[in-house]
Length: 408
Image (cartoon, rainbow, N blue to C red):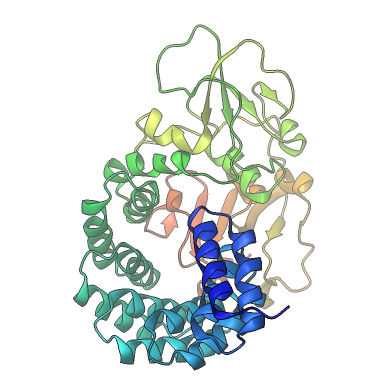
């Protein structure tokens, strides 16, 4: 049954009230009826697209938003909402075009410039993205998303001072924002500044997300009447990250280590499996909080945990990297099983648990780290403060690795 103008106005008011109340599903049905009755009504198309965006139905929002942008060519919001939809759908070139139209209509809008930067970054055009963030911040120097995004770009190319300056500016407006504090902490820690960075790094525990937390009080370094549980934060305790963190960080404190079945046979101290009862435990601490809780410094780290296995040196070399061994090791009988690590005189591999096991045993170890490595390693390559027998090399330094392995 066709709708007359009065019915459309009444339906539109009801739809807006439903949307204002958060009932986007009902509002979407009403706007869809209006669009069906008036298919060229730009404002109705725009509102239909908006509520579909609120419902997360981005593919369905695209068509009415594209039509709204055509019928409302001078409406900035119509262009920016279309751009936001296209960005969600991964259509970044089209989003960039819509943002360019919006920028022509409103050239001094910081949010449009920021979203342009995001889109350019998604297209891999980092230099142009940085210029867009610069423009956004020249308009509004405290625009938090632009400050955070530019900090990420600067940090990615090693401009730590500039990245930290942007984060400090953002934190003036939002001093308790855990994401900003965490990012500042990570940047400081990657430069080796544990004194300032460790406190901020604890902000990760305030953020929602997938993180394992046992049902125990969090230990803050106080004396305990019961046992202390140390645990990896990863939800998958069998993951490479959890295995690696456990071997690297379970040291320097009398505690029971929650670990996977894989590592249970390696640790010489008490362990417990995830899912087992935690009776008798007074508190728990995530492994990555130990540097702060125990006042560790990179120059005075406690020794690694004692392992049950003992070195049984031979002439064998262990290889635990995703990349292929250099030509100098071609034809060698390389150890690739963690169980055989104690028989090696040298182990080479990525930053994974087998190389940490080798280093914990005192076996000469070469750890291949990416250009932006875990902050725990610090800013320098060479001999690691974590293991007396471990040496850090960049994973893309094939010449350096070949030189290190020459004569092996």
